[in-house]
Length: 252
Image 1 (cartoon, rainbow, N blue to C red):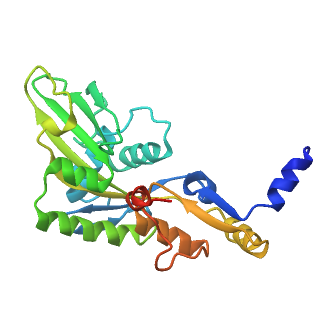
Image 2: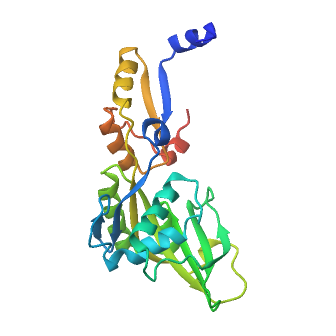
Image 3: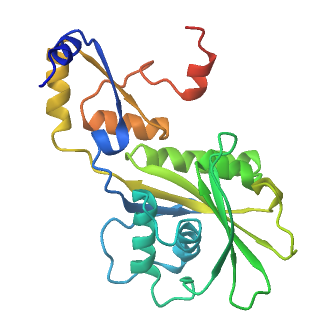
């Protein structure tokens, strides 16, 4: 330590807020699970039989909703899985041309990418994002939305980062200004695993012994955060998880 005030600050610390991804975890994501119509498949280990046809479209549009040359670890994991599991099938589209992108926004935590097939006769739109945002884009009825939520919880409770995936098509020449103007069809869910750093649990024990309370901050689903907290022995009982919506409503 080069500066004595740093020691003083550390000595007076009572609460330590830490990001989850890349700090508590290794930020080395890998596709772990895919889910379509309530059917789920663990893809964390290679299967010599390949990926069943049921899940081809889900992975196809997950890749199309990602950057072609990604730098984000999540999109890298999606593309690597696509190259491994879809190579040689009609669901891999290296010759398609990107036409437009609709980025994430505070109002809608989903992104869409518009592609033109080689024939140029139609546009294909792929969307991925927070499951609740994708459900909203697809205008699912309450019964199906509830079924999707149940599956999200099953995947999140395993510590997976869960994304929803949807598709749409468009034939007019002028693209709309917002994603909601497309008629999206819900495809399914993907779950990505990010291993916890092996040194984290011991570091948290040292913080506790020093009288420092550790708070994990993440944009993940609450059930995912709770599962990771359990892995690192961070208390996550009743009342210990606060969502962003709940935080906004607080007056202190």
